[in-house]
Amino acid sequence: MGSSDQPPSLRWLFFGWSGRVSRLPYALAWAFWMTLAAAFLTRMVMTPQDQPAFVVWTLLFFAVGVVSTLSSVMLTIKRLHDMALPAPLVLCLFVPAISIFALIAFLVWPGTPGPNLHGAVADRPKE
Image (cartoon, rainbow, N blue to C red; front, side, top):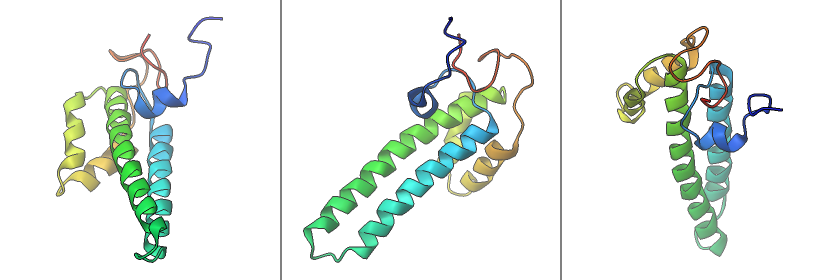
């Protein structure tokens, strides 16, 4: 059983940078991070500021923010690989005026059919 027979890991999906990722896993990963951030934000807002739990929820919210930002960069690099576009376009996500349009484009733009420089098939690390 070769490495191509095994499904890619969640660690690769969220934090790997090689290979390609198609639209559906990209959208689902973004939805996961948004949902997680919203859950921690809700707990932070619902906890009174004078309770010690407020500090815990605030720190957890910011930790999720940092981890999700790093993961989103890695996801977007793999998405750009699938579209056969250069990875530095990931910086578009950090420009406020165009970030939402870039994210929408990354979500709806189809990937390159067949193999490209970043892998033979989508949703796999480059071998």
